[in-house]
Length: 413
Image 1 (cartoon, one colour):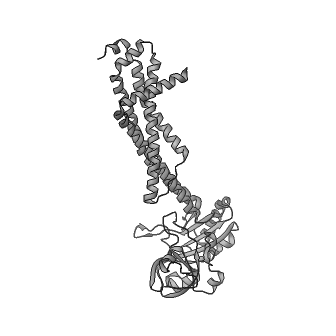
Image 2 (tube, rainbow, N blue to C red):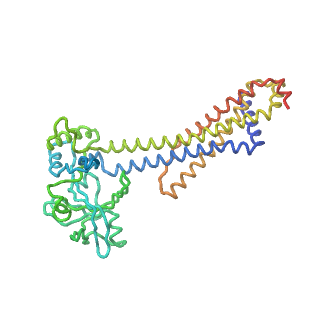
Image 3 (tube, rainbow, N blue to C red):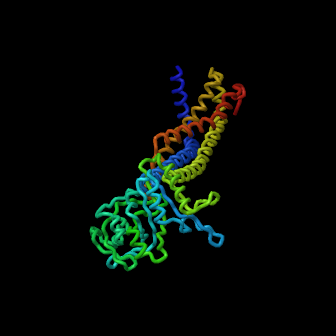
């Protein structure tokens, strides 16, 4: 009996809304826009999160990044790396004193012109220790990377990123064995690295040239690079659970080597992949929250629209309501009739909004190249939320209709 009553109630609701198609369509528009916006925002946010996770993973596994400290010049703080506080000797000491570390490497970067034949390209040239490729888990796609022997003998060998190859060599040309000039110093290419893509900061990781640290220090970067100063130290542990203890040991060693007193702050900064991932996650959650609030306004407007159309409908159908009550309909039946109309409006509007949101997300992916991922639970959440909004805003008109005095309703013109 209840099933038959529910079916007839929904059927009558659809029939009534069909008689007022324009009003119903305009009312559903707010719900459609709100749900579509929520679906698109979640899809873009999930896609961005997946991309950032992949970019952070491209750093390697269980990586610890140690950067020089900041300095203040003329009252202006230069930020991380503004003061030269790390040396290759620091890195070697860390490697020998922290057994939990799988590998330790150090690098120094400088933007230089690299040429091959008639082509040249402005690129970041890194003087690196051989352990860099192990820490970053960055193997050679062709050829090989340089070794400790190359560092000790100041070999003029270079390893190129994929972007550099694309800009200096013809398609299909094998760079391995070719000679490139870095600041007019000839280097033999011994390897090309596998493509890494963008970093977590949005830079192109493949737009790089790597040469032995000692060669960079003495033959390329200039006298300001002497004394073993480095731009960053990288380390990696075998297990993720060792990161916290390794960071504490690294901090203790560096503070001792830099002769820092108990009251003095660190003149270096230590970050782990977990720290970077946490910052990215917090930023992503904040942006998604703000956008979802904006999208919720459309749902609110849609809910108000549902309430308005039902209130208008009550005015237009006052005599009908009076007749139904007079022939035996209970107030419960009137209440459920108008709640059913609110449910149909919000549910159909949410389904159309889901379709629009999915299509919009696909358009964003194709036109802007942004990845989108729309989980099924997000679709279910959006539909339930919009349906709840419709029922909430339909409650007052339904209650008002159910409380109409049947005698006054029959007299209404």
